[in-house]
Image 1 (spheres, rainbow, N blue to C red):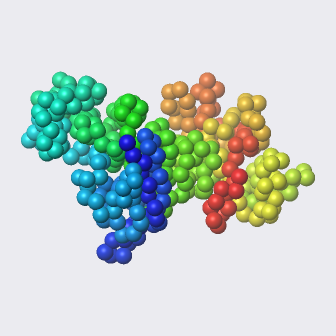
Image 2: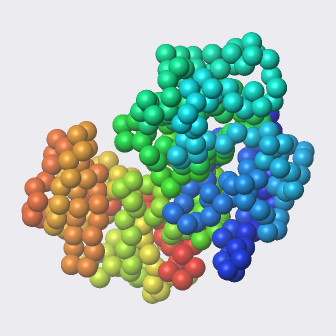
Image 3: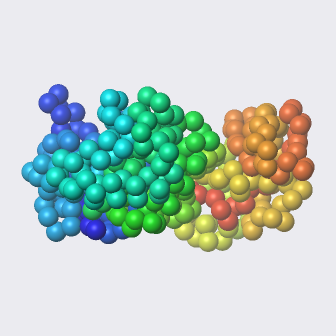
Length: 367
């Protein structure tokens, strides 16, 4: 298999647009790395440059020990799975999966052995004589995966492969691809704009915006310790709650004052953020770290204030409750057994031990 090393990668288009800006990262041998970010952030362009489908403006790409900048795609020993499946409509499933092996000149018995192996792994043995037009979206995606598997490449590249599937099938196919990775052990790089896919599938996540990498780390590390305001807001569903205010002296320590409410910082937060006293700051808190104040014993460092329930969104095992004050709005995950009603006043608790603080100018995570 192979490690992929990206160094100072840049992409300029003829119109001067700088799509990828000095991107560097490594996908270790057998690692599953997910590139995630909003549409237009440059993640697919990076993937296409790794595949050799997009010309590099500057920088280096190594697959294993080989520098592949000028190497044709067919010589890079990669297999790419596309969003639109890219199957040949006039060929059967078997022929679609066997096509690359036939081009290599492999013996038909060896081809059959590899196609049958991939078909069994993906549960599509009964579809080998059908054509793509006779298959569902999920079945076509399995065929596209099978076509990649039979080649046994050093590297799998995935370009938003599940975005055309319905929600239930996306969840099932996520699990299939993760299982595939554990079974085959190939290095995989996966592009998506869906942060839930990134969190559930990746060994490490590369978060991008505007052609720049904002953070590279394990999923839970990115969730719990986002590098900046963008990463904090992009990773997590529902999104992190953000409020602008300032830090003020309060009972010999510091408190976050939003104008609507005042919340005491923990001793550690106050010590680290002392330089921000009487200065603007942005506080963030995840929906799961907000509680109905009747249950504030669940919080490590509870701070409570009054809100009004603006909306209740039922999701079965949990409810998302939108809460408002005069100038702010929050989303909380609350237990459906003790559900508030729309329009009622509700005292809530923030667990300040879980709060994040960001510089309003640099947007860097301060704590």
